[in-house]
Image 1 (cartoon, chains in turn green, purple):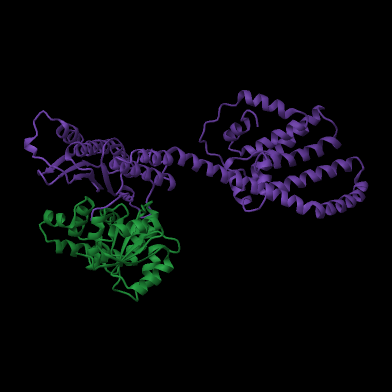
Image 2 (cartoon, chains in turn green, yellow):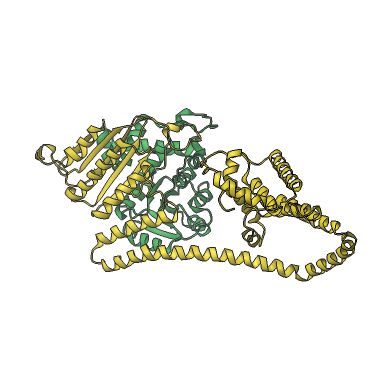
Length: 216
Length: 412
């Protein structure tokens, strides 16, 4: 079904790249891979893939540097962050740079294929872990010294929180939809709204603030 | 020194023990009175209560102590316990000088000193040779005093003229020696520092090697032996991965320190995973202290996870824990067989007693949602006592300190 999706793979572990290639091969078209930031930027510019699977932590600036380098010039290339990282601020920083989702490397291959399809359609992919990070990040008041231009941007609605809580509890989008008596499309709308808030919120001091709150 | 008398006395009088030690040394060298005094005081000083706030030494204290010493000295002189002015005063001066340089300070002082000297190559040798810290100021003052004492002694012996001539000769010789051997000495000291750093590195490497050997290599061996049991392999790999990550990223202590909800949840899940064939994805939002209701919640959560392993017929479960202002809620969910609650015989006590009853006793509640074929979700909830705890938060939310989720894994 998704064989048409063109995927570029960025990870500094060759073994992992080989594994992902083997797993995804039958389902998507892998147009290239790279093990460092510069090669990745070049490769993405050449191949113009639909989706880039991107490691959060890499020598030379990590996934963030890759997104920042190509996001402006190639707005149609979408990024899905992939990591073993435990640190909230790293993940949030990559999302803020422009990635539309985050999954951990232990994800099952079928789930990864589904996630890539979602990203390619322009939706956001929230794993339970990312949902937890976001709930944490939007909890409580704004960090001191951060003024809000747009209060709407800086907090989640009750409905959005409800959706995130269900995702964090391990529900799929479809299950969330049937639990809350809404359509899957509505769930996706909520999740995309949350992603937008995460990328644009004045809680952009999130990283410093997170570190201050002992988020590690 | 020996009996900790100086520290005790210092705590009593609110004087820096360094000064008191200096006084003792001076008095000991000047007629032995210090030794006597030390002994007497040692017998009479009560054991100092720890935690008595000590005021740092002030110039005023130092002066007053010095004057007391001088008074005692003059008293001794009056009493005839005396070796003669020309000897005692220079020796006293020298004693003060060397005592200032060599007596030990407290640890805070030392660490400050070592922080400063750490940047100077080769200083390790010097600071480790000294029994205590000698701040540059103390070193200078001590040296001046000793030099003064030597000069005074020589003056007393009419040796100053000779000293002047001798001084030039010695100075010239010293400069020559310095030029000759200075670089060599510097290099030697530098090398000592290098060797010390190298040794520390070696020790770290050895510790890492020991850890890798104890855990990672053993696990790899086990995995090879269990190659025909993929599930066992996955479980081994998972627990090893978690342990190694905790070890690498400095959470070694956190795994054993059960004061934080996040760490406690991880610990419970790990224990269940170790015993049962189950992988649990954990997401924790917010943070709370572990009190009795939370302990009950954790115990109920453990029971719920064990139930998944035993009855659901699946190998994965999700745990979500959220701390709110007035309650802590946990969800344990699986996509397994599910069951009809009504069909559970009344004598089956697992869910009713271990989970729901336990939470009721702590003012909370437990709910089960399950349908055959659709999996099960158990909701656990206990009330939360609002109590500021943990370190004060930078954003002033003491009673509501959110903590990182340490979730893992994924099912988008």
